[in-house]
Length: 69
Image: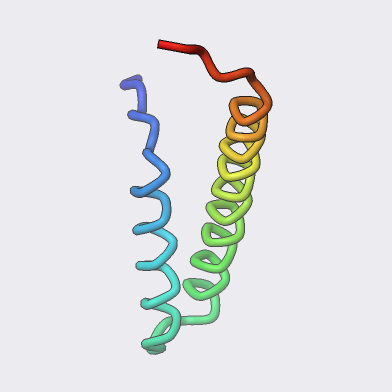
């Protein structure tokens, strides 16, 4: 079983955008639409989690005293 490459934040955004575009275009069956929606919700949750982690890291970095050169 091959290991899956971890998607970058930007790749996940692009995938979510593609899912939304496909659903907006229509022409999908109900099952396809629900499948795309489910994938989109999962991607959105992953992205939200990554953004929260980045925000926390920035908060911590902002609280650290600046080092003098």
